[in-house]
Image (cartoon, rainbow, N blue to C red):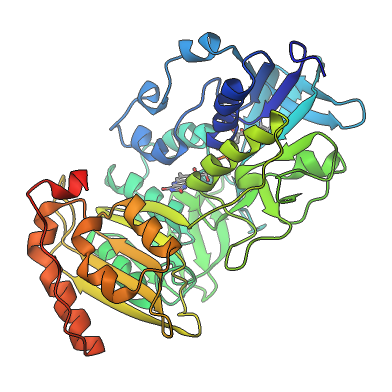
Length: 472
Ligand SMILES: Cc1cc2nc3c(=O)[nH]c(=O)nc-3n(C[C@H](O)[C@H](O)[C@H](O)COP(=O)(O)OP(=O)(O)OC[C@H]3O[C@@H](n4cnc5c(N)ncnc54)[C@H](O)[C@@H]3O)c2cc1C
C-alpha cells in the first residue's frame, strides 16, 4: 500500500461521513480523500433544517465549516449520485447530472467511474412511506433533507390546513414549522400519548399538553387510512382509520425513517434493516465500511439498539471508523447513550437507558414543574421535568431524562458509566446543572420530592460560588 496513492472514498457528506473525513485527514496526512453526496455540495447541520424554513437562519448559517476548509484540508468534494458499487473491481459508478423527486434520484448524463482503496458508506436514512392511497399526490411529503425543505416551501404556499401523520421528533418539528406560518395543524398519532413508544407516560403526556398549548390539534389513537385527491392531483383531505375526513392542502409524512440500504443491497452487501456491520463497522465486502444512520450492528452491546439514527451516534461512529479507514482497525464502543432534541419550547436531553417501560430490577424517580401556562414567543416554556432511573439493588444510576432544563453531559456520562448511587447523584445535582437560577429555585424541591417518595433524608449540597458549575 503506497500512502501517496491510497484513496479513501466516503459516500455521504452528513455528520458521519464528514467526521470520518476530518479524522482520517489527521491520521493519514498524505492519502487522497474524496467525499461524495447527491444532496448538497457542502456539509450542513441536518438538525437545524427547520430553522431554514422558519426564517431564523439562512443556508450558509447551517454550514459548520467555511467553504474553503475542504480545499485547505485536501478533502475533495464531489456533488454526484452514486448508482452502483463494484466491490470486486473496487470502484463506484456515479453521475454528476441527476434529478431528485420524493427521495427518488434519477441519474442523467454519462456514468463515470471512481476507484477506491477503501470505501465508507455513510448514506444516512430516508423517510418512510407505507404505500397509503394518495401518498404521491402533490402536497404530500416527508422531511429528511434539503430537497424536502425546498419542496415544503412550494407545497405549503397558500395552505391553510395541514395534517401531520406520525408523532416523533420530526413530526413535532414539522408542526412547529407550519405553525410559524399560521397554518392550522392536525397531528395524527397512533399511540395513546405522544411518542409513548419512546418516552415514559408522564413525559409523553407532558409533551402532549405542550403541543396543544401551541394550538396544534393533537389527535391520539388516530391513524391514516388514505389521502384524497382534489381532482387536479393535489391533496384535499385525509381519511382516518375511523372514517373521519379531515380537510387539508398539505400532508406531512413523519412516520419514522429507515436506513438507506438500496445501493449496498444492489452491490451484494449483507443488509437487513440497515447495512450489516461488525464491531469494526466493516461490511460483508472487503475494504468497505459503513457508519451512521445507514448501519445495523450485527452484535449490539447489551442494552444497546442495533440501529441508531441519531446525530451523536453518527459523530462517534465517524470518529471510530476513520481509524479503520486509516489502517488502524478499531472497534466501535458506543459508551453511554445520549440524545437531545426540542419539542417546541421544551429542550429534551436523555442519557443512558430510559425506555418507555421501566426495566425489571430498576426504580424510577420523576419530578415535574409546570408554570401552568403556554410559553410566550422567545421564552422557554414553563414545563420542567427530571427523571432518574436506577438499579433497585445497587442503587446505581442507569438513565436520566430532562425536559426544560439542561444538565452537563460530562457529569451525567460519568455518573452512569461509574454506576454512581442515586443518593449521591441527588446530593450532587448542582455539579451537573448548567443553570445557576435553576439550582436556586428547584433543586431543594427535587430533593424533597425524592425524600418523600423514597423515605430518605438527603440534602442538596450547595454550590461553592456563583459560577462554580461552569468551572467544576
Ligand atoms: C429534520 C430532522 C431533525 C433531526 N433532529 C435531530 C436531533 O434533534 N437530534 C438527533 O440526535 N438527531 C436528529 N436528527 C437525525 C440526524 O440528523 C441524523 O441521525 C444524522 O444526520 C445522520 O447522519 P449521517 O451522516 O449518518 O447521514 P445523512 O446526514 O443522512 O447523510 C447521508 C448523505 O448521503 C447521501 N447519499 C446517500 N446515498 C447516496 C448516493 N447513492 N449517492 C450520493 N449521495 C448519497 C445523502 O443524500 C445524504 O446527504 C434529525 C433528522 C432530521 C431529518
